[in-house]
Length: 190
Ligand SMILES: [Zn+2]
Image 1 (cartoon, protein in one colour):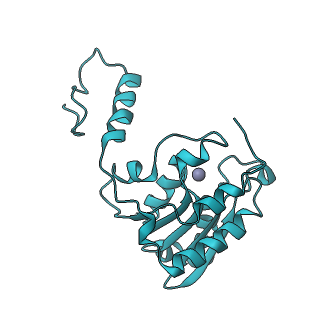
Image 2 (cartoon, helix red, strand yellow):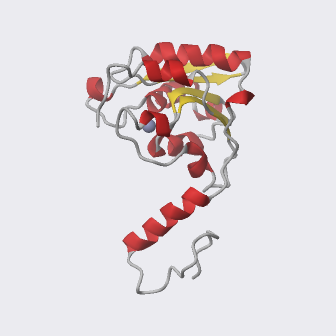
């Protein structure tokens, strides 16, 4: 079987490639994959308003990350990082918001919704966002920016989105990024 990812030049069935080498190759292929456009210039006044609310949510978090899920101008759910509070390393702001949205509105409400988050989603959160068929992602600080303050999985949301074809998502990055990074002024976990 030939790997279907174009930048990946070798055969997956070759016995000389260990599983680890295949994963490494796929990861490096993703870096070169063309993802959805990410541009702060696409942000509307509503985007700025909702992002400011996501930043307010972030201020309540164990770490300063907050998220908001919006549909047709209505806020469906909010979430902030509860990793330490819940003793749950997966309790990122986006996951908390998604779980609250599911509990209050059901999964259909997430389809085509917009998720605002103070920090670009990690690989776990971006996977959840895609599986929930969120239609648009708006983030403030990028993974690259966040990595200057704390550990990050170094893959962008656009790179992850480029690896799937079942749930189209528009991505706008950099909205109020400076304000989001100011929340980390006294935080450095490296
Ligand atoms: Zn996350």
